[in-house]
Amino acid sequence: MSNWSKYFHNQFWEELREFSSTRIPGHHCEHCKAPQERRCLIDEKFLIQQTQNFRFAWYGVTLYEQGLFTYFREAHERWISHRGSCPLPVENIGMGCLRVVAPRRLLSINDDPQEWMKFVKFWLEETENQFELITSIHPKFFLTS
Image 1 (cartoon, rainbow, N blue to C red):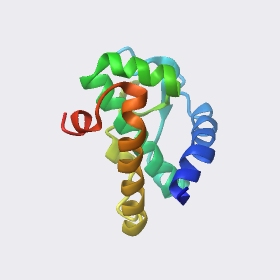
Image 2: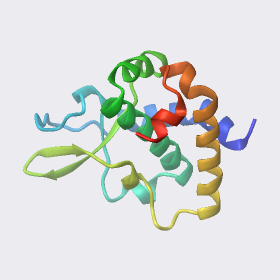
Image 3: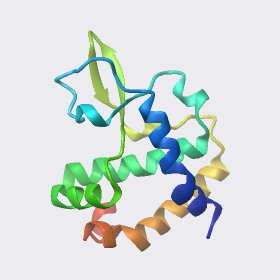
């Protein structure tokens, strides 16, 4: 089991639950497409307060979540029933409105490129080995959508 696999399966999900429980937006923006109970507010301090491993893992999960929601709605429901609801990163855009952030907002230019490559390798292996079992979507179809 790789270090990334250990982190992702044994530590990341608990860290994400803890983090998201403290970052619930105080108001309801009806324009934001993320369900109210799944919104997790991030701000400019987010990148420096969280470890890059946490942010990389959340990036990968957010890619799954947003790709499935956008292109494979039935598979998205299977993903949620298997994995549980994943907090969705949202940001304030002014006037009390929120938007779901693009996964790239979870990354920093200062992130270690070598560690990023290790994560990408893990994420692709995880996708190849687990994704179809959970979603019934072949990784090739997901990654090319």
